[in-house]
Length: 396
Image 1 (cartoon, one colour):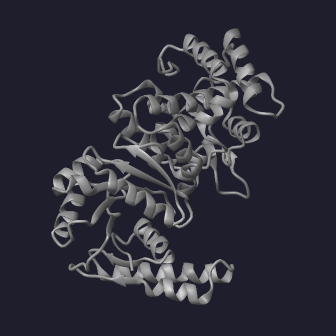
Image 2 (cartoon, rainbow, N blue to C red):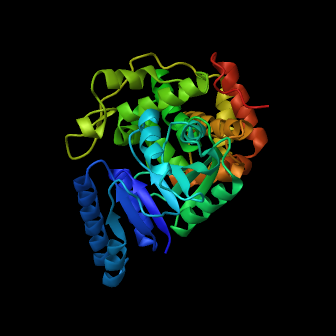
Image 3 (spheres, rainbow, N blue to C red):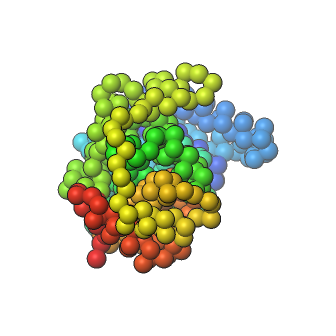
């Protein structure tokens, strides 16, 4: 039987353990406190019971999966794979995994679930860089389909192949990527939020208008501003700042002053009751409006936005909707193109990542090709000419 050790029994670690056990792996769970692991296993048991109630598992399958979950102390049994899902601190990860590496066989793979730290540095600090990689699940792990499999500078090809095969056998969609800041999703998705906030800052459209436009024209499940309320503005801005700083403070990834002001005022979104929207009543009520005169849109930008939006979607739209839609989707496509240019991942892996990691209606580079690269280029050139921060400059 295949064996995996999951280090860390918080929400993410428990989710990963559930996925592995449900797919036939013996799971050894470890945390600083055995009671935390016990609570995690009890929670997994309840989720298995709900799956039985919904007809997605039989009672026997649920019991067998539960029986594959075990609490382990400091001494780990022999494992094929170790997945670390503890606090996002390099020193802590290196210390915890350093104690574990000496217990493992020479073929055992060490995977980190980090979303922001260097896989290469962790592998080097552990002294096993060739068999250390990233295995970045998305929360909640039992539901979200994507796993980003991250190659460190010295990760062996066989290790990447093995981890990708494991993730696929667990029912996941795999996107392989290089060890770069934000990997794929946390970098490429940033313009969805940032350009929406900039449109509000520019006085071009209200948050409600932006959210409605992206859902009705683009088929996005949530609008960008309601999504930031759902994620939490503190979490969203922290990720933005990390990625922005690590990518040399690129203007494409620069934080929004409006979003950061929400954090400073404690308006974090749903969890605080207020963000872009007020969440106390029966339905969210928008409470963010930026009082600036609505500027005149450059004719060249409007023409390019109209052509881009007509090519991108079948829905009827007016000029204001075209500007919103084209700025946001154009910025997303541009970031996807930059990610491919920078060697973060292939076009196919980038598209897989955004479809299954953030539930975009289609892959961004596939969408670019459907719109037509000349239309996309014309839009980006028009937007670049009308702005002064180079954020719409496309890769050569």
